[in-house]
Length: 391
Ligand code: NI
Image (cartoon, rainbow, N blue to C red; front, side, top):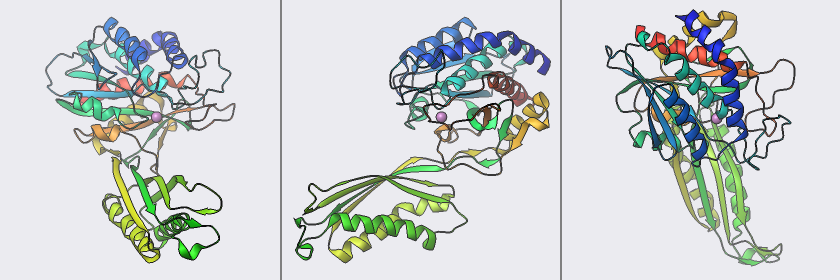
């Protein structure tokens, strides 16, 4: 089976590169993947899949029918959206849409979903059950997975595979992670209200900027003194707004940030922990406050059995020297975790790093990939799907 999968992959490789370059040249922002969706739906239809469009707003589902002797449905999820970044590569197929770029490799992901569908649609006699290809919109704003699930994408699904490119792993290699892969990511907003006054007479006012500074500093220090150091927690205030003039004491400040954590217990206690610190400081100096803590997306927890399947598929396909078992999770976030609330799943990292030049990180205007990774990705996904039914 592996030989057959590899053979088909080699045959369609030039077509997959064309597809990837077309998608790369025509990136669309989260929730606006209209042309990408039409393009994806067209290819899926031509492979004989049952296609549903406008799932989760601009998402697409392609269902490949197996022999129907196994009622389980395996989902393979890829995402389609790009970022509001002006591309600065000199590629001939660089973005033709000003200010929008596939800088997170979702053009590769979409191509992998299509390539896997192309391969497996040529081998339907080997599939005991159905495979559902999920082409998700709006991953970058962490909403697309929820939209897809609301529209029934996970109905009757018993397992889900996902993939994300990774520039610090060289192309042709696969990164496998057991357990926690990514962090829970929440949004934090803090309003502090003091009292305005003359910049020369601070004792007659309540300085919201100074209090905001105390809040930021204390939160960072409190992580080191009150949180378990073996359970990672990152709190970043990325925005501060407040104040109107250099010589006027600010009455209002808004702080906004992101909070990343890996441990469920840490995650559960965060709103209370933050509110207590903010309340204490504001109370001491007579300011009013409001803390808005919004739960974002949970942490991706890779399922043991399904991770084993991808690991074995990759080892058999490429040899153990091309499989890295990742010892550390990432504090990045992935809305793949939303699917995992409905079925077990696993996401592997696809190496796209080039050996001959510097590799820029994800979300960088000069981010580029080694396109040989496309074959590595489709074969690994297709063979993992095949092995799924054996387990
Ligand atoms: Ni991404």
